Amino acid sequence: MGEMFSRFARWTERQSGRPGAFVMAFGVVLLWALTGPLFHFSDTWQLVINTGTTIVTFLMVFVIQNAQNRDTQAMHLKLDELIRVSKSARDGMMALENLPDKDLAKVKSSFEKLAKAADCLDHRIDEKVERAVEREVDEELNERGLRD
Image (cartoon, rainbow, N blue to C red; front, side):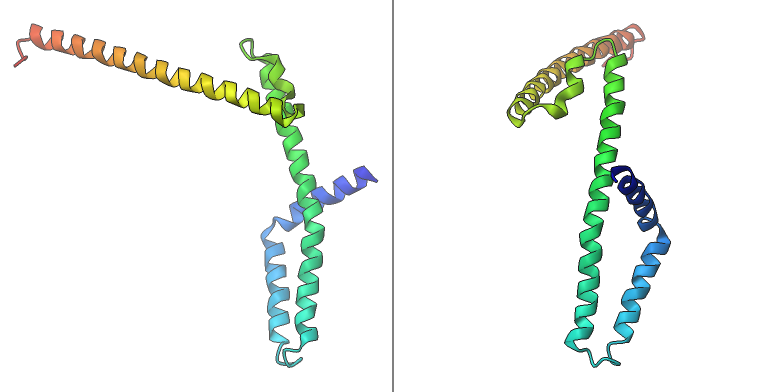
């Protein structure tokens, strides 16, 4: 049952993302709108489009959720593979999606601290490089007699 739904969801996902699906949906809405005068814009006429769109939306929620779950799982597997083959990566990062929210927040906080420290370090390195380059340029200009 699960595999059959997954195949159906993948097929529906591919079909609904095509231009033809949009044109068809637009055509249905246009046809509905054009029949308005025929049905005197009655409550039943309005109910038809409301019911139809509600049913389609309700069913598409499950198709979209299935697609997101599959894409997320594939992305996690790809990232896990990159972590696994990288010597400097932390293997513990491979199962982060299974951590409770509290533990995930701690990991996030740790990485925010690392990012701030790296940012400060980058600025200090940039300043040192900038000063060294300025000194080198000044020396070169002095040697050529071009310094003010």
